[in-house]
Image (cartoon, rainbow, N blue to C red; front, side, top):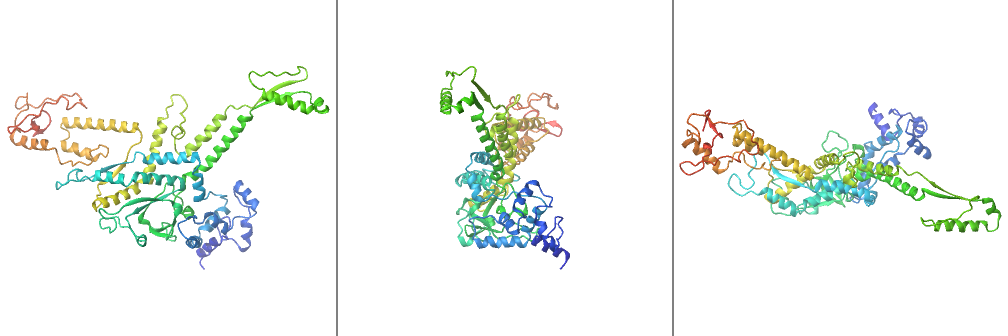
Length: 577
């Protein structure tokens, strides 16, 4: 056996030393003992109580395949055996021996669905999911796209309008909102593309293309959110890291049915490393699991603060205890006096005591700063969720001249990145299916942008577009740009609102006027000008009002508008036309 194979065999049996080299036969027992290892104090205390390091069976129980309702037990055991054969469990055991200590592990779908009832968990997950989908998308067409409203053949082409109506009919926004919630609660979600296939055909790949036999024009189509607790991974490559299917299941079990991966839209936010993929059901780390530790700390702080508030004030009644303890029924009389004092303890109450032998003292525990402690523990929770406190909790920002606008802008940037990371590929796949359902083909020029969040973002975008429009108008007025170039700049700008127009298709009046002006009136001077003199152009910037005071376009001999006769708009051969 080669040296590399011997080391691999040692890894699979867990017989390795703390340095990673194969251990000698007599070193097996000491390597599992907590004493003598350079491990964290927390891990040392935990494993010192047990006396041994975790066995391969214990590692398998902690990091084995996730328990779901998707597949039978024999399928799960087969995957468990496969993970053991490729050395995943021995590597996890080795991490304990090297001192990593007790590492976090998947909570399980039962626990995750249980803690989804917690108010703070729901607030964190729902806030992000709502903002990711509430403004939804804006359909666009880019490049050399057909005109939306007229094709090259003059036929009607209302593809964007039809897509908008179709996605509303299929409730695409609601489907992805539900899936985004599930990603936060359980680490991932699936959206099943249902073209009306039979159960026996679900294991076959779904062709999302022009020649698809299932996604036909006018056929059946719907989208269904699948809870990950009902799924379990099928076959995948665990031996070749260079393979595109490395730890990527080719198909999934869905409540005992084999469903090819191409029929499912997989949504994940927090991907996990390769060794942890099986324990997380090949999805991601749930946001609820990440937040749970911080929620528990906040609950402890809140309860401790509440206990302190109920006991922060203590009234001490000083009296001669020797006389009370030696007299008959002395404690009974004392109990009556204390009970009377407690019942009559109001602002109008009066207490009579012996001025020489008795006294009443009030002891109070300082509670200043407790509000800050509770608030800080809650703000840490908001920070872990990447959500401003004013957005998540309704707490106004504190400090001089604080408005929270910068926090909201940063939060919207975070939402935009989450939309790109989690939703974009899935929405694109769904829109392709809808195009096949509507037209039987996929137009590559159709795209979409996520609608901006917040009125301030919309106002800023409108102001920017207004500035760009004024700039283009000045350039056209100074004859730096032609109308065709101006239209081309509008097409290239996805936020202009005119990205779907044809830059070469000028309006009819302008195109005819240009052609006739060149032939019939090209040498005619502009109104108010002497022949042979160029037009006077002042240097005053009239951005935004370029066309407000423009003269009416003159008519040619045929009674049609001659745009080339407007002063200072077009030139030919260095002279005003």
